[in-house]
Length: 269
Image (cartoon, rainbow, N blue to C red; front, side, top):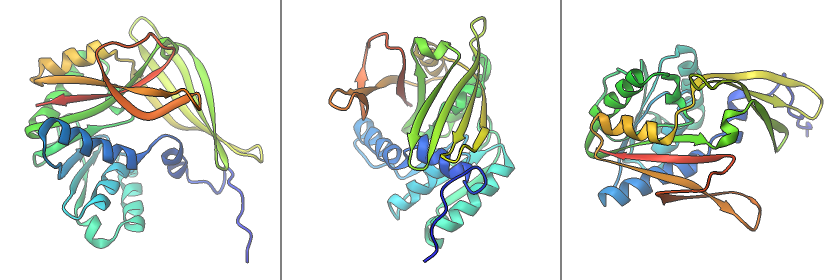
């Protein structure tokens, strides 16, 4: 039996590494379902995944239930081609038939109305002024059915304003989050993701992000200004026993001024 080679910069797929180190699609799909049931006391059947990249949430969504459908939208044709290959590899024909990959601008692209619009991994932070952010939120609002929900995420804390690197070890590689440059005048934030391997090789700047660091009050105000009826914040909990972040998120009205935090924002139409 041929021995499996260790991960290194030449044989690793950066999209696989990203999904293993950044995303938890099983949890996010369950969270979408949970939030929809909480606010609507019904089942969520169709979603629109904006800024979808490899469309991993949409893929997990259609795997989750034979009645579920997804629209996955991204402006980058190259990443949509990657998404298509991954979908063909991991989904059955019946499942892939319920997932539609769409090339377009999430800020303006028209699709059918859905139960839930999701924009994860801080992707909407590409919009750096209120008018463009509100334009995106308005388009999301228009594509929700009555009582539909928009689900997005955010991070913050005083370390979010710092230029720093954080390393997290995973099976076969190390994930490096690089907050490379921050401008406190306009909150412009440049970040990179690097991957490092046990043989000393690296994938430097595997992913790059040019964002504005938006605060929760700013996001809430923009959401309400385009018509969302209710905006709730769910803050990630802390596992005291293992001294790490938990997978539980709690609806909060206030929280401690921690060095770092991650939150989900649920906006109800």
